Image (tube, rainbow, N blue to C red; front, side):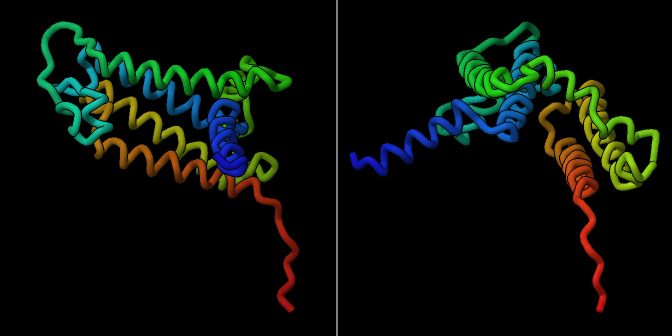
Length: 190
């Protein structure tokens, strides 16, 4: 192997094992969500009538069926263990990246609750981001609440309709939140 190929491969591996702050956020969020879905699936509350096979879902049913009829008891299959292990590995990489920072993992967890977005739910003050950040906070909150509501009431944790509504609201909230942080430029209409 040439040294260029080895450098590229080690770069990809280090991007996964030592992610940037933004990538670590994605690793933590998606892996925690995946672990929660796997636990709901094991206990039979992820879907009203089916038990998901993660191996079947991710291989588009080339390895096995993606949807199996669920039983009345707890179902734990090998694909659940593999999926939880993969999610746990990415959770470890994300949390390990934050453990190397000054505030560490407790600072990350505290930052999810104590930040400048959630106070904007009750204020349209320009110093707190104005109406843009208020709409961002409400949109993000409604996105998460709609996902949780439909998941609990209709066992729609993996329903595409629920995803489409909640993802649209959450993405709109994130976009507005980031747009509210853009510094004003010079206005020159000459």
